[in-house]
Image (tube, rainbow over all chains, first blue to last red; front, side):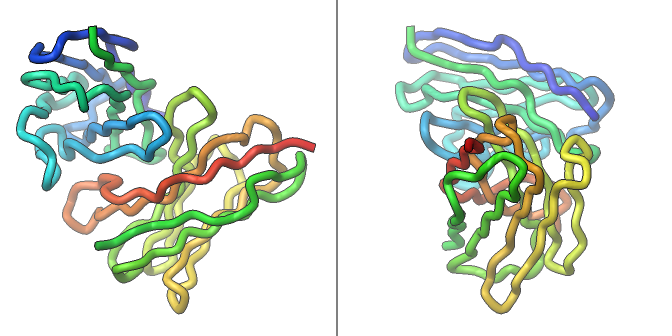
Length: 107
Length: 120
């Protein structure tokens, strides 16, 4: 299986801050990477697909980049409603695998 | 718009079979991959498997041969059966759509999730 490693595991930031989460794959996954946001008690929500494509309806403060094994997810200006856990997920090879998650909260 | 809803027992005894159904409303079951994903309490996400609208299935080898995913196009539903369950199978189970036909496999629509506890 392809292992996905996110860092940090948790993060505190202030409203308006630029927030960055990284995701590293255990092997080359091209750009076959998605990012999801999960709020407590809710299902995950797709934010970014194909490493850098913004899902329809998702605010433009969210962005993604990277290719190969190293990927970055960025919130350009943190808003209170962005408090959630964020997951990366690869779809280069079955079984699809997720990172362990990054818990983001407000400082 | 398309919505997914999981249904099934919330409590299953050890060694028995967990059975869940996902009902698709507002859209067709055709042309997509239909997935099951689970999340143990306080933990991360694990992909269980999918069924393509043609009936082709794939599942996570970590679950060995315990997984069966099936489709009922007449009811716009797909189902999960997980056999020989143990406490380690306690989780929130989600159904999710993957629009792999666009060249990008991503879970773009999710059900709300259903908690299944394995306990005697």
